[in-house]
Image (cartoon, rainbow, N blue to C red; front, side):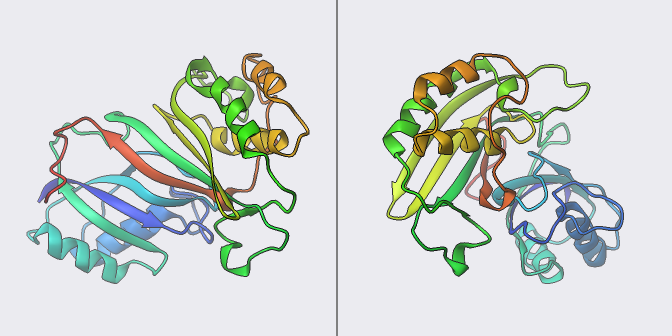
Length: 253
């Protein structure tokens, strides 16, 4: 079969993030275990975008090499048999030996969901952050204008020693209301640790009238590490899609 890319969906509530860790459940650990049970091979997988504990994914991309003679369709169906119910492989594609799921990605798309309602929803408690006071979405979108383009996003990053650069390019930053569900969409070439959760934390302050768009813009341009926020909980965050250049794989397979 050679090298393949998997598009994976998961609910991250009970996992300690995507990357494998000792003695705790992770997305990587579950997928590698499922591959081993299916094929008898011990293989390491790679992720296009690392997700933290509690973060969900709709379109995570995983790369691995495998020697199975199964067709891709059969491989996906069989692998899902061995995976827990909160992780599923949605698609599989053959890729070249030189393909790298992380380095070859041109952008990642995340969303953060807010339940903006007077009452909480038990059905949404693991996928949307509850904000009981009304949010001014127009003000939040005005603040989002400061995020578009190539900038130093250190104010929105959690401190990490040894990081080479905090400059990133944001292609889209938008807040959309659909009834009581308010969703923040962000697309960038790559993301810093907790960047989306810190950004939406700052935007919620704007939406609640605790900060105006100009103050938000000044914080965004300050280059002061970790000055924006607060960091909202992980359960509202979802990796929607990882984008690649045309021709990396055939979407019709």
